[in-house]
Amino acid sequence: MEASPGAVTKACLAAALEAVIAAEEELARLDAVAGAGDHARGMVRGFRAAVAATDEFDGPAREVLTRAGAAFGDAAGGASGALLGVWLSAMGQALPSDAEIDASAVARALGAGQMTVQRVGKAWPGDKTLLDTLDPFVRAYTAAAQERAGVAEAWQRALPAAEQGMRATADMVGKRGRAAYPGERSRGLQGPGATAMCYILRAAGDAMEEMSGGEAPHI
Image (cartoon, one colour):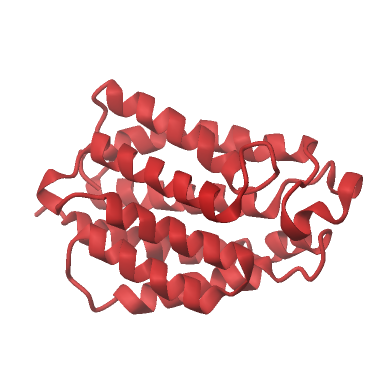
């Protein structure tokens, strides 16, 4: 029996939690250049809360994401916590019912999430933030959806663009918030937010493939 979009979304959140736990030391090292180095702890707290808030919930994907976003924002703290929380919530609010979810619907939700992050964070691609990973991913995902790829397939096809965006932040200087403080000292290191976002997207893609056998068109 094929898993529901809500169940797959919960699996994606659980996989993202495992990914940020595994990368916690790396993310803390990258973030320490800009100051406190608490980005990684916030990501772990946020995803733990998101998973806990949805673990016993069997509703549709859109409600899974809105509940996860609210819990994430409350638990993670800091600017990055707020941004990841509103990202999850905005995607949930933009999704249709489970029965209507396809790659195009997910593309619209991803776009809504990105626009919300840009509005709330007052940041743009090129500022050495999570947007430098998210923006190319959303563009590549949307292109794959327009070619009638399924949700899981489109996600996998978009991951190389996300990884390229993440790597490109090593040549950037932070321009927003605390990340702007070190100036040129941040050049040569990947942005912690961009790195975390890439790991989150990759983990979600792995969860989709695991639950679908790599073939199902739905999330």
